[in-house]
Length: 203
Ligand SMILES: [Zn+2]
Image (cartoon, rainbow, N blue to C red; front, side, top):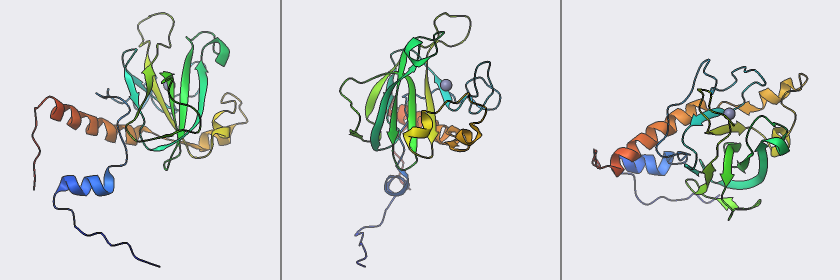
């Protein structure tokens, strides 16, 4: 086996981070706060009609959505609305991108028309825009990006989540909360750099 030689060692924490840790990208910029615990947008929270298998990032309709990691588009599908069997919600779509982490679902969006199934997307690439999901404003946020991560291929994602015998379905879900908190930190730092409030520090 031929060992790969890396010629130069990292000289700063930014270089360390870039070389070893710069895998994930914030799906929104700026990133809103991440719902946790019993919040209705949190992971695995039991709601009126379902158990929530993702995390909702509440933000304005039309916000740009970026791919968290590099991967292959395995589906572009109807996510909510009459054609998705949830009449009480607006029509929205989802993109599922399979990468190293699993299949990441970006739901309640309008996918970019230039993308198709089978395409490879880079981490941080624009993939669509947040779309309104609640029909009426009754005090709750009407638009959000729904992020879910699945351990395996798409076929599991498309199974009936409300089937009580589908216990194993939930075992196959990954909790995206920690990753999204990490990406919020990253997005906050990025925003500070964009607005010129912090400078690069070398040590
Ligand atoms: Zn959701």
